[in-house]
Length: 223
Length: 223
DNA sequence: ACTACCACACTTGTATGGTAGTATGGAACT
DNA sequence: AGTTCCATACTACCATACAAGTGTGGTAGT
Image 1 (cartoon, each protein chain N blue to C red):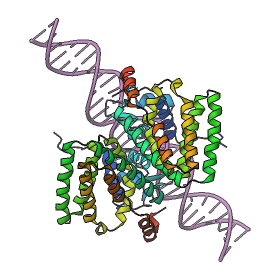
Image 2: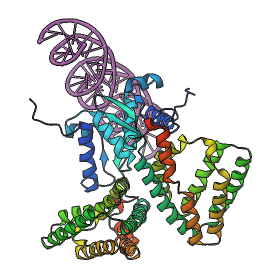
Image 3: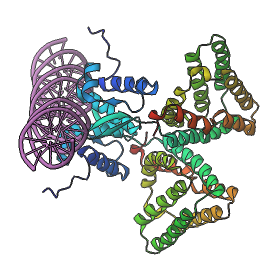
Image 4: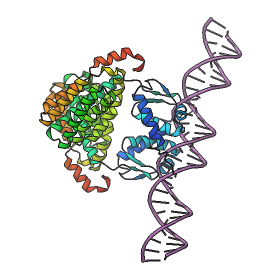
């Protein structure tokens, strides 16, 4: 009997691990990867490593140069801004839908989430707060039966988050974000689509100014 | 000297060909693929075939069941509707941007494209008309410097187009679409964002009714 | 000192063999 | 006749060997 459960294929495991390391900047933009090196590190052959590279390349997280090497993609400011743009448009549209029709259990889920957010802020648990933030937005999509849309946003977030990660975590004004989340839930409950859209727009509008600053501070990470 | 230019890697070639066959329904939803079979058909080894399967799976065009087989994904009505939804939101937002600021050369490109559309309609050249339709929308994104957004839409279009393909080509009311395109160009020129958004919304609103009808007509192709 | 060249140590791309899990059809048994 | 079991022929997964392109450092020649 084999209790050493293999959670998934080697390919998926390598893919997930590399993705995480890239998004956390543990593998910084521009870093050289290599099929052989990675295969040794993960204790698998080159085949599953290669296949995970293919996936990462399709997401734009790595760049494969034939016969030369594979590198973690530099952060492309244009791509980051467009990812933010797309997310803003989609989230605005969905929260409007939520104001038109939203199941009670999803609204309850939002309220519960808000309570937990307050706890996490009090405990200064940034990691947990990240998760709750994501779950909050996800719940809105779920209530509108737009989970496929949420997946697309998640993919685009890869590029956004890598840029966000450069700012110190303490930079996050959780109180402000919490207040906005609370306003969103309120707007959905009172079916005020205009107010909801307005809050969401502000919530998702990182100013481009920050981008330029980051690019000056970490020039080697940007395209 | 080797004049048999390999336009790209075997992997890319296989990927492109399979994708085309899936989108054209030459490989219908539910069809069984197999690494071995495909490798024989393309005259390459299983490796590049496998890697193209990985890419197709990530796009949701095929489904890989370990140790069982690889199948062309069934059309998921929810996914199709969400793809349409996302495209509508993004295109509405972008055409509003175009009304605020749009380079002259892009506007000229739209006008030229419109002329060609009229020609193609007259010649009843459906394939050409498809291309011009796509180019028209692409030009709008290009003028707004939102080409990454366009790429995302292109990916989602895969699912939309497969559904569209089921309708007979003659179903397309090119005259109507042409008229809408013309109105869009007009609105951009006169910077009338509200009018532009309105036309775009109608332009991209396939009614869900069609979906249900198609699902009844081709039940084996749907999830 | 400088330049042209080439061997070599890398890289990714492709081919192939073996492994393990799954579905199926037929044989043996009830 | 109906059911269970197993051989077999698939499948995708992974490891490995080889092919082919690229960059670099050293060397020979000028």
